Image (cartoon, rainbow, N blue to C red; front, side, top):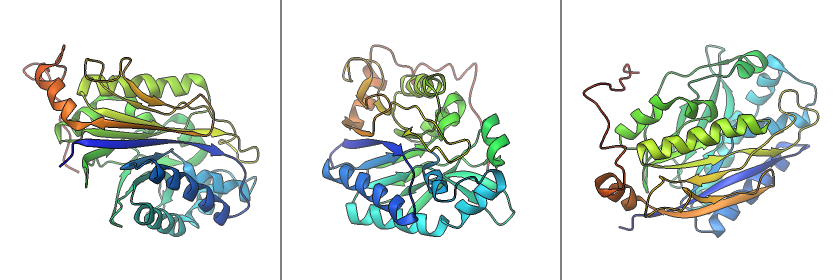
Length: 291
């Protein structure tokens, strides 16, 4: 079996849509682009479905999350169908999901190309998310099986904490997907620098995918800044600067790269440095409570 995997980061343009069908058409287009490149995985950005709020301008807080809840079933069905149709494993960005207990979670879903799904809730909630959307933190940490190996998802702010990514790597993840949404360069760079640190310290591949464009009538989602990328460890056998591919800043685009999972094993075994092997587990370890 080939150890190469083709990855696509979708830098998704936010603009006003009049209906769910318009939103679906844009998602379908980018899924088709990923398929055209023969991608095994395509990553859409965090808070992707907030674009739908442009068809109901002026809503905020609980009113906005209730509006998004109306679209949950259609959104899940759309991306499930797209993954099967395009034969691409899709990380469908993230969607504010209201559960039976009334709490709102920021949830990223893996839509496998065989039609099955798995999800990861955001664990660390930013002050802005709490104030604007009333989002609650998740408590599960999942490694997800796919037809191209074990993967994991860390939503935006989550990647700025090293412990979850370390634990996910211990559990076998070699591909880490980071859908994110930031409004300025500083926020973007926090995600970017930390995502690259996770790639280096764990000797894994990390894919970041952010939103660009403007939603003038959507509160707390009006401006965006992104430069999506496929990031690698920094050593011989990988991209010279640890960037296998990246999008231009703030343009609608995709970044596509083919990576070799076998290169990770070689780097851990015989790299210039062996960040994974040289951990001082006699001094420290990452432990998580059972979920």
